[in-house]
Image (spheres, rainbow, N blue to C red):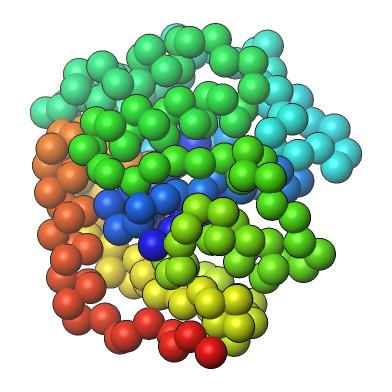
Length: 244
């Protein structure tokens, strides 16, 4: 099974679950970079509410994600201080920073390299088995979006696509089935787990960066949360879309 998504920065739990659910997670880096997404930013919880952690980038019209440079103004130390200030009272802040600090401080010139490094270290810290691949390295070509998804699946040997519920409105499951690819919907946003989150008086806020969860539960605790939720979902979920 494969999951395909543009490479996110400090991903949310839905992405992290895919690292357990799938054999391969393909990072769509050869598509245009767009402002306002999660490729260079994600959200954390602070004493003042939810805030963004943002990696500044240099933009040009039509620029691909793989060709997007990290701006010289990126200050890894400032980002690490912001995380420490936000989660200073959590039990696993040092455990989190032990993984983040060398990645953010590695001096990556390109956003895709920073994200791939961080995603790889996140998967390792969680003990997740998925193999991360960049779509730019798969040498696939197709004239249409569905054909390209099918080609990525074929290039990685996958015949099941782990698809987010947000793609239900446009993912052509019939066309994918004609290519021998079945779809399994993951619907993670509808079943986001709750845990003892930082700054509890603000109420629980779902869909934050995995940074938030790890600070509260640690890497092992976060992995256990993801594994338990995945097993439960697979037992209770509807069967996959049938192959044509």
